[in-house]
Image (cartoon, rainbow, N blue to C red; front, side):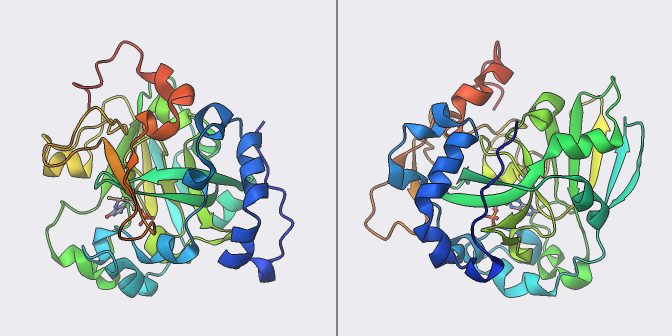
Length: 299
Ligand code: MTE
């Protein structure tokens, strides 16, 4: 059964500071998630959530520019209501699912996850969201489906970054169906108990904690169930550097830098880099998905 966060804070208390002070309850919550194998043994400070400011002012959302501060600066102009997600392809009930209707049918819970960008920085983020499998259940996945494709909104008048062909817009991503149905895979709709800010992918974005951050596609407008592996933006841009799987792996370096260690955002200029964890620390939960695969080939 999914963990439900014991929310003893009111909305007025939901400041980063207040939540920061309640860190021990959050760690207890992690235990409730059934992630002890992956997280409970880690040094406590390695699992202390980053403050709100780190999480919402140091972003990658290239639709708003490639600078880390561009999303916070420009994403405010994104219109996120009304919002719907089209679910199509190999499903029983294809159609446009209104965000409000989705939210009325799912249970939002707290998930404190490590987040590891392929650029070798990391954070710990207290997401609020629901399991992707709940959304896929609404649409009814058909037996022929093997992959799930995702697409981000493309609205040039609100997205200054799409003037530049950094990638082939819209941003697209994909998962194998068993990865998508894994209980760790969520659609995030909040951070620190507040609605997710635009720069982090409002109103709903994918979070796959054992994969590099670029798999966690933001501001999703379409989800398509398919038989074949879907194209993904970074793989299309540079297949040698970015594979379809993109599982966090300290033993497989990016062609241009090592992935053995990572810099914790907010750790300070002189903070020691920390070792990268296999599957970002979620090995006990997800390694079985890749049995028999050579993860140095299927990157
Ligand atoms: N989704 C879209 N649509 N556009 C992007 O540029 N960047 C990805 C991912 N999802 C990106 C995206 C990358 S590289 C990372 S590391 C994470 O979003 C960053 O998420 P955050 O800004 O919430 O930390």
